[in-house]
Length: 598
Ligand code: X8Z
Ligand code: ZN
Image (cartoon, rainbow, N blue to C red; front, side, top):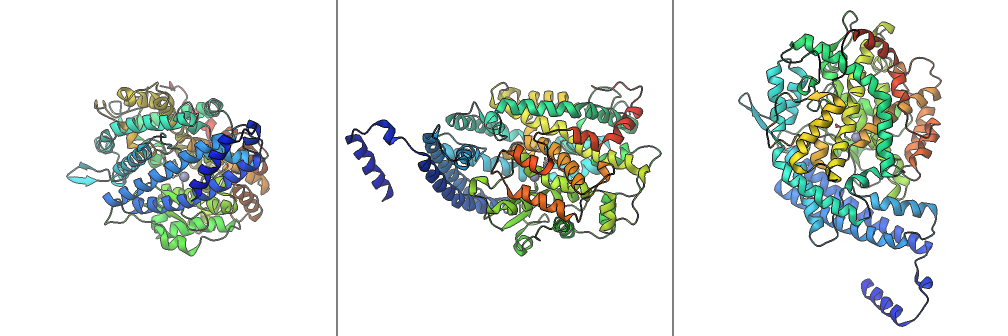
């Protein structure tokens, strides 16, 4: 009925010779269009979310089929709306509508070309790649291992042959993805170009209230602030690995062997703290051990995480969170174990899904995921297109920022995990542990999308995917694979976000923002000591300001949101450097006489 009415009025317009200006869309038309678009997108979003939740919790042929079908419908709706929105380019309208018109184009990070069948193909490939990753397994030592099993070996084994086998085993799951990945990248580019972006990399870089090229330059600027520190950490860790494993496994100079750092992607190195711990000063506790000794299980870890947020004055999680979340890996079915936080209905049906292990790494991940959930609930009152983080880096940073307090000995004592707060002598072991996760992460956070940007802009073709990946791993992280890579290797596909098509620059930015948030929050609470010892647990006035930042969602350019909470209006890694200050001199001293770099 509606489309008939539209056809009739279009015909009438042909017959009446009204001046073009009278036909031009107005600001009010734009506002009305956006309101309709938001309500259609919201309905589609809930439908897609539920299909995605089911597929991620029960990976079967049928759940993949349903997710891909809904995904295709969602992409078609999005293409239709993005196209219609171009009618309002250059139309004067209110600021909120103007911002929403811009955000609409950025709504999907995996856009499909505007031709029959393309949306279904893109959605099908996205579902397939994520499912291959999430169900990936390999044989080792007479057993079939999952990623979780392989991660345990990487974290705990100190046998270089076992480390190499677990690393290579997991990387054997991704060569089958390569052709699909190349096809998907081509389709995404076609979709992005259809909306006026240079390529999909430019689309992804456009979500930061600045030109895409300016964002790339911003990341490089921030990395320059941290790079000298990373080089010192790399140098120190390399020398300790050399002492542990000998020259044949880890030479004294050059890059570090990627499987020796305790993590499948060498993105966080905390699991090898025992190998690199300072000589002479020991840490009086291990959070890994404390959590186990005190009888924590996965649910208690999440409850503890919730307790931090409620101490800031935020409302407890709804009962449905506990009923509907997936917190432990189920034995009897395939699930996406990579941790995530969900907002099913854009109101209060928030959940997490993670295969929680009782260790310090997942203590961190729990706080991280809950940060997403509290953010989602705080901006639920915003219109649909503003229901998002100030930018995606903010979304990733909230839980990490809370985690900075949750890892302080002061807080661990408050919740009864330790009995006494160690003195200043333990600052170095503490900061070294934190740096193994936070500083080590930064070059990884940077290189993942540098690789994808090269794929999308065509400077790397499928024949050179792996070579380009390792060139970036070497350049930024100073790493080398444990042995020559097979000709068909597709190592980027062995990282979740590449297989699942999730942009990654957000995590690099989060590692900058979280320290800016920390510096500002500690100042708000009147903290005068060193940044790394500050905990905002129980600080209700900080919680109030935090909640205001969260409630704003994506309704204004992020520098304005940052300014309200921190007084700063640009990203600045000087807070990272300030947090780790005491470690800097210590590392330099340890590295005296070493030839740092690679
Ligand atoms: O993917 C995540 C979260 C979900 S948004 C668990 N993170 C990145 C990763 O695992 O690679 C958090 C840190 C970086
Ligand atoms: Zn996250």
